[in-house]
Image (cartoon, rainbow, N blue to C red; front, side):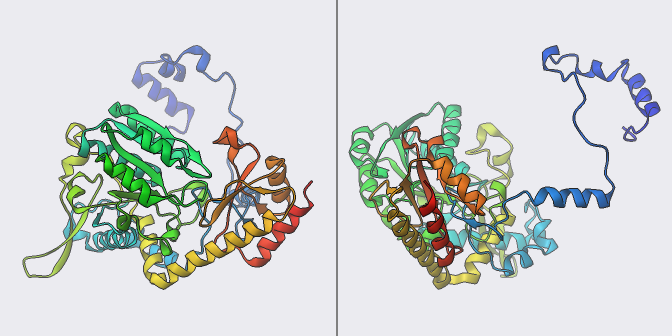
Amino acid sequence: MRFIPNTDQDRKEILEFLGIKSIKELFKNIPEELLLKKNLKIPKGFSEIELVREMRFLSEKNADLEHYSCFLGAGAYHHFIPAIIPHLMGRSEFYTSYTPYQPEASQGLLQTIYEFQTLICELTGMDVANASMYDGASALAEAMIMAFHITGRKEVIISRTIHPEYREVVKTYAQAKNLKIIEIEYENGITSLEELKRKVSDKTAAVLIQNPNFFGSLEDIKEIERIAHKNKSLFIVAIVEPTSLGLLKPPGELGADIVVGEGQSFGNPISFGGPYLGFMATKDKYMRKLPGRLVGATKDSKGRRGYILTLQAREQHIRREKATSNICTNEALCALAATIYLVSLGKEGLRRVAELSLQKAHYAFEKIKEIDEFEAAFASPFYNEFIVECRDAQGVNRVLLKEKIIGPLELEKYYPELKNHLLFCATEMNSKEEIDGLVNILRKIK
């Protein structure tokens, strides 16, 4: 088409060229009952000045985290983002880079991905990591498929303490491979070990666990690993709040075969739920089964250090029948943010973030427990999220929002048996004054 039609004459010429009398004929295959019979409620076009004014007006309706206190986590966490991250990410060679198939022209991008992989290995205690996945949910689902390819078994055990939306993605992936998903219930906020022992069998490809889990509780990783490996099943650990690795022992040191998770906490804003970045790491012996891209370090003909995509041909991402996965594009810009975050904070900085998150969450938990209207739901140890039961969860959040506080998650949506249960979260961003203010408001709610 040589132009975009702007006038009636333009549209008439296009219709004549197509051999039809009206635009409606283009959509004749759409059932009549699905067609809109009225005009869309779209306002007239704006000038740039009017548009900026309108967008500013709309944005003021958002709950801005700079002016609201946030006690909501559940997979998206409000952490401090050092100024160095947006400054470096704003460089054009980073934010305009896409596919590094030509290594001679992509050394900078390839190096950032390689450094990201290295940091993920150090954090998880695993041998090899790939370039970032789409998000934590798809990373977990890809790990399940990877376990199927390794073991040849077609049953997967997944705990109900895993993020419910992650479980939905896993189930969607499983349908395509005809895999059977078996869910394990929880007791006192953690996976039921007795039920797990009963349901793991020689048909089990993998056991999937989240730690800290969706309730914020810490799972008995060592015992779950023993149960999984006793039946020669793979043990997969998902980490949705990775700042916890500043304090907790890496899953690789506890026997995990594959470690996946969500890297949003590392220098990426909440951004209404994305884009985020999933990570995946595994043992050396499974590296050829890793989905997605893998960047390796090598030397050129002059002995200089260089970086290149390795172990996979481009056809991996094109020919579905030959591919171990259909994951192709990575989240390199988000992974760069995570890399800068981890390098700028260092080991001690990450440990400090984790300590502050832990301390503030436990301080808030102890204070809220003192209120007659609120009761602790579980007694299991937790990191920076915890659950309390109240009389009216929706009412609590309505009051908090009026006070410019983004309140906890109402769990009934995902767990009907947990009606009027609230999942609170605290990070280094929550000051003592904010927590005390939250508690004072909760005391007044009847």
